[in-house]
Image 1 (tube, rainbow over the protein chains, first blue to last red):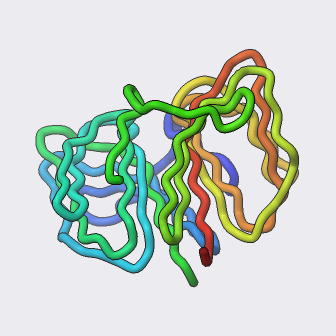
Image 2 (image 1 turned 120 degrees about the vertical axis):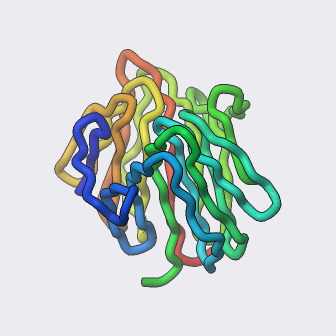
Length: 104
Length: 104
């Protein structure tokens, strides 16, 4: 692929409450995710960096000891090895999330 | 770092017409870039993927034989090895750009 327009991009059910569209490259995996209100991840870490941008809505991201409720135009960067998690409250969230996988 | 708010993030002069803020991880480099109107890159390719999101303004991105004028809420994904370039016209552009460097 080359280009996505988030105004028209069709997302697919990824798991209950999360719809997504994913692009897998050789060193990046890029995903648009729409997460329903009232959902929560599981704290975890991995050996590659992860970052993302909040397109709309609100999502709490925790990175190590830091935790912040992010809104549109806010960005997160999760360094490799740091435990992180996410949570939505009263609002859904649409995000663009990118992971850098060192070898595939 | 963990979080950036693009409403308040201070950018630094990167080169004439481009202001940026960069985060270097172990497998990702993430950059917010504000590019003035009437600027143009140089066609190039590299061995890692690159992707990004247009926050505001307009920027033309070419990826191989594809070329598109992107606006806010549009996304690009440049696979490793594919020649690409960028150009702004009458509008500046603010983008979030991510590259996945396989080894650093």
